[in-house]
Every structure is written in C-alpha cells, then in structure tokens.
Image 1 (cartoon, one colour):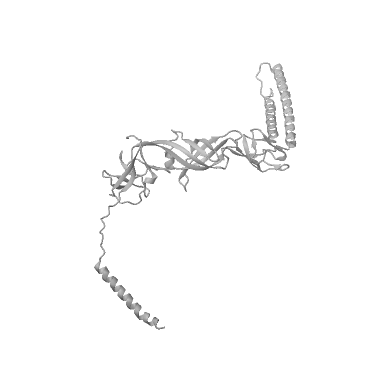
Image 2 (spheres, helix red, strand yellow):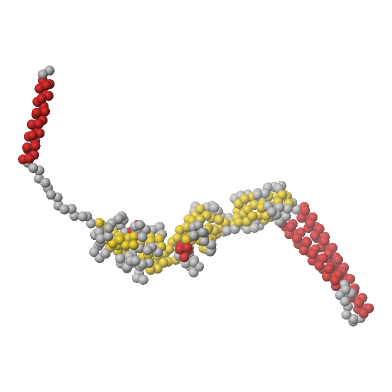
Length: 381
C-alpha cells in the first residue's frame, strides 16, 4: 500500500530529469541543415505542326426524314356504293400502276350510258334526215328559180346547223357517260405503297371523300437543313455535290434543289435530296419516315490552313512558337470549322509552327522543347 504514494512522487521527478538530459544533448549536437540547391524549372515538351497553305474538301453533315416524292389521295368521281375492294388495297401493300383498287356500283352509270347512246343515235338520224331535206330544197330552188341566188333559209341551212349541233351535243353527252362509266373503276395512279384506306365494302363513295392514300414506291426525297454559309460552300449549281444517306442502309442521292425560303427560327434553308430504289423496294432499303444522316461533299477550298480543333483554345486561340522556341498565344479568325478541323485564310505564315499538344492555360513566353514536328503537305498560295 505504501509503494503507490512513493511512485506518485518519484515518477514526475524522473520524467523531469530525463527531459533535461535530452535537451542538453540536443544543444550539444545541433542538427546539420542541408541547404537544397535551387530547383531548375522543367521544360514543357510538346509536339508541333508546321503549317502550309493547302486545299481542303468541304464535307457537310445534316439530318432529315425520308418522305415519298409523290403522295396522292384516291377519290371517286361519282357517287356510288363500293361493291368490290382489291385485297391488296391495305396499308403497307405494294401496288403496280394500273392495278384496280375499287369497283363502284355501275347500274346508274350504265343506264346513263345507254341513254346517251340512244340520244346520239336519234341525233344522227335527225341529222341525216335534215341533210336529205337540204339536198331536196336545193334541187327545188334550182327548178323554180334557175340560177338565182338562194337564201340560207330556202336551202334549210339553219335547220342543218341545228341538227349538227344536236349531234355534237349528243356525242359530248356520250363521252361524259363513258367517262363516268370508267370512273366507276378506280386504279392505282403509279407504282405505289398504300399508306391508308378510308372506305369499306358496301359504303357510299362520294367525290368529296378520299378512299385512301398512296405514296410512290420508287422515288423518295429528304429535306436537309443547312445554314447559309454551308449552302454557299456547296458550289451548286456549278458543281453537283455528292450526297450519301445513312439509315438502316446506305444510299446515294442527287441534289434536286435548294429552297429559296429561309426558316425564320433556325435561319436555315432546305436542301432537297432525291433518290430512287428498286420496284418494289427490297428489304435492304430506306423506308418512308426513317431518320437518316446525310453526308454532303461540297467544293474544294483552296489556299487555306488547317488547324486541328484540339489545338484551339477558347474557340479562337492557338499557341505558336517564335524563333527561340517560346510560346506565343495568338488569336485566329476561323473561316470554316467541322468536327475535326478549323480552316483559316489569314493570320499565319507558311511554315509557322503551332502547338498541337493540349496545354491548357500557359503564359506567353514560356520556353518549350519540341519532341516532334508534324508536316503539312500543301502549296504556297
């Protein structure tokens, strides 16, 4: 029990003694301070490109939806009941030009046709009879009056003209009746796909009601929006740009025209690209309504310098080297930019070296070490 109070007093004294001894030793053996040599700043290592004037082919990208070049609503010319429908007159079905789609009740038009034929027969008989009377009137006048001039009325010319007019009217009514008879059978206007059918068997078809809608099966187009600057780079109509459409498959298209109307919201014009496919289209083809990516190959720009987009900072700044391998930040004026490169027409000289290694924000005057020089095949303007 007595050992604990003794330790309580001895232990702090022992710690004080040890601390004093250690401090005295530290004073007698001072630690040598090693002075470090001044650090040499590391030199930036970069790759550069030697610039040259060159020609650059313009490639534009746009997007659009495939539409049929022709789209038609099918209408009846007469009012009649539908008595027959082609089984292929269904959405998605392919129809050749001239295929009968709908047959209407012909009883009324047949009756009108028979009446028109009978009226024409009567009119022709009356004309023949009037011609005979006119010939007889001419003979009678010659017997009674000799060589004296006869009046038109005496020669029955008005009656003959009236009979001829009645015959002509009857012929016209017959042609109309024949046309109405033909209109009772409705045919596909061209090779097409059925987009929709609105009429059913037994329903009444009228001229004001569409029976269905068809679209062309072999002629298609895509409207591609382009900016005014992009349109100017096509070189059209002096040059014909090559257009490739990529969807579930790839097809080549032809430039049909550029709309003169500019969209007020997007400030873009529409390029109309058209293409044809086999009839009927095979499985590997672009479909109506399909979204496609268009690659448009424009004209060849000459006397430009090409700068990789990765070498451009803040949209319009680059680093180039001076004669002492020091960085100089320079502002450029882009003439054209695509997804990979930016083109300029001034601001740099032939054989100027620009840094293509990503650097971030580095102050001008920083000395660098060139590890590789990329050359540009070009020509002096």
